[in-house]
Amino acid sequence: MRAVLIQEPGGPEVLRLGEVPDPAPAPGEILVRVRATALNRADLLQRQGLYPPPPGVPPQIPGLEFAGCVEAAGAAVTAFQPGQRVMGLLPGAGYAEKVVTLERLALPLPDGLSFQEAAAIPEVFLTAFDALELQGGLGPGQTLLLHGAGSGVGTAALQLCRLTGATSIGTSRSRTKLDRCLELGLDHAVLTQREDFRDAVLELTGGSGVDLILDMVGAAYLEQNLSCLAPRGLLILIGLLGGPSAPIDLSRILKQSLRIRGTVLRPRPVEEKIRLNQKFRRRILPSFQNGVLTPIIDRVFPLEQAAEAHSFMERNRNFGKIVLAV
Ligand SMILES: NC(=O)c1ccc[n+]([C@@H]2O[C@H](COP(=O)([O-])OP(=O)(O)OC[C@H]3O[C@@H](n4cnc5c(N)ncnc54)[C@H](OP(=O)(O)O)[C@@H]3O)[C@@H](O)[C@H]2O)c1
Image (cartoon, rainbow, N blue to C red; front, side, top):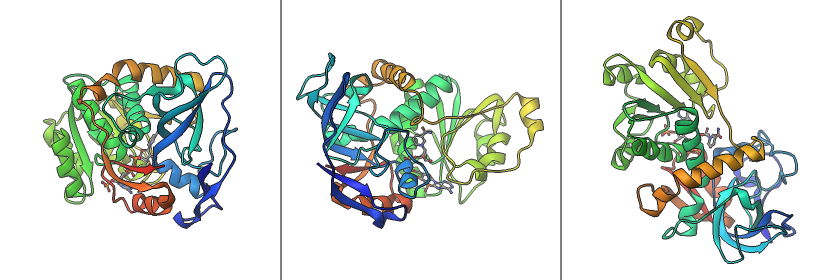
């Protein structure tokens, strides 16, 4: 089969299409003919040699999600049959014509969604669902501060926030992205190039701060984040795009009973991922069927142009997901 290979650690130019043997499904696994996959920031780090996949996953093929058709089922597979449309998370090797996955990690494609739309769902919607609902306990009457609101994760999170009945405040460095977020249901937009988001949040919340922050920036936003969390508020870190280390004023955390939590999907034990998948299937998947939730796609590149797609993401150009058609 054809797959995108990382020739050596480096820039987007190290990605080349090559030939590799087809994967074979083990017991409990399905072999999927991939029709679309999508980019994630982790792929850029993996390409640079900074984020190796878990043991057993080919390190030279990036890709954390897929949508396609079941081509064959391994022994003891009961939930899926050849020909069925499926999507799901992968620990790697998604930029390829075929992938194998545990059937318990696969999800049926909601009716009415194309493969390209479905490929834009797993990583960002599972991340946002897990962070906001399962870990953050976000609910009606609460307020979420969402950084990078126009990102893949951000566009998923703001829709899930709307679904829970909570109020969303989103930040971005781009006015255009914020305008599109408002169209998608974001309640309040803050352009970080223009105003201090801490001041904006305190003004919007009447000085009380937000209950939950979903943050992918890290160090550069830490101090401001802590100063606009409500007492007992929770800061969930999902990325470190603005750096990994910053000084921290522990007195505020102590006095206000604040909480900081980091979370990553890929290295989790497989049973944990399966439980998350099952909860997502029951609680969230039906909302794609009835159009309440929509995968947001900026653009689709052919698999052959994975290098151009990486370069596009590195320049922060995308609103929502970048998909690769396979
Ligand atoms: N923990 C997990 O399990 C998990 C899972 C999926 C993703 N993630 C992480 O979530 C983050 C978003 O992923 P994605 O796929 O949604 O990425 P994406 O669509 O490429 O968006 C990244 C966003 O980050 C913002 N950004 C980049 N550098 C920044 C900086 N220095 N300061 C402030 N904002 C900055 C940009 O926002 P503006 O240009 O609009 O300001 C951009 O829209 C990444 O860090 C990714 O690694 C984590």
